[in-house]
Length: 405
Image (cartoon, rainbow, N blue to C red; front, side, top):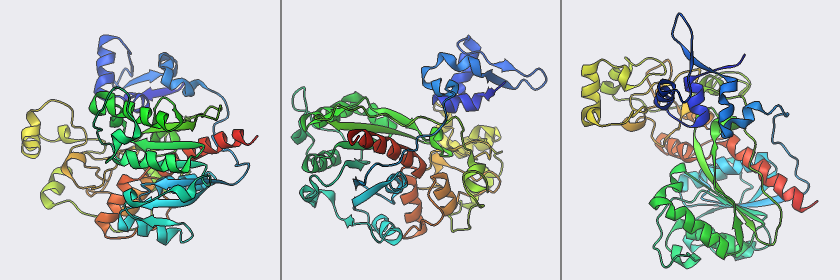
């Protein structure tokens, strides 16, 4: 009989453990208890009430792999350190060109893939018209910015000045069969939902049918990290073929799978530079057990460390947080030592190193990062996890294959 801990079900549903404990107490989803330890768990059959967990009961052969029927090409915007581009490459897509404004991220792309056409420039000064008819898909993780509203239905000019406008302009100039945008989950709530509504309206205006935005949780796609991305897919209106998002995997990887030899990586994580905590923070985090956070500290240290935040509501579970070998990492940030989002190593009182960061984001060990250590952390923290991007790539290839049947 498969048992799921409160932590595992919280990950599966994208809820906090506090929410599940509340559901347990009020009878919405009651947990079983071990008699001696009072350890709480759920039986698999209890989770059938959640539509989003259907995949746990699907006995089909797992896997999204599909072989391209011909050579497909992508134009990658806001490419960063290449998380999306490597994933697309692994799925069989060729990146015809990649645009990135950050010098060190662009340098990372050039060092690792000298054959890629890396355009290091502000996207606002680039014309994409030469790529018209040359690319099958345009991808990109544009930043989330508000629009100035003019009327009920937004057109592309209403977004001028935002980087989504530049994404939409690149799509309009190249007319690919498909466009795929990615963003943080918060995009769906930005400006009360008006921002995503405006994006859909703009893509519709330039000739694309936009699917319902989909939240993909990286932990279901061979990524040992609780990262979520919103995926926005636009299909050119002359194409009457559906796009299927990648199916989730039942197996969830933990930090030990990222950093130690096993099924995810063939060797232990290589040594690499990393930042350190200030001495006062190190003393505090020394007291936090694996899987614990600031509430596991003595009360006087809680108050001293949290200051005004101690008296505010909310769990703030990322503060003074030490990771656990047996759980996926919390979402990595651009700066591993900042106070709001500590991600302390499970055993040692330090942030993850650069290569540990890269593994949690599922970058290959041979992928080098340019710039200072802080620049490398920033590039990795901003990236789309490679394995998640690969699964999205398989969905793109599957879609394109059906067009060419």
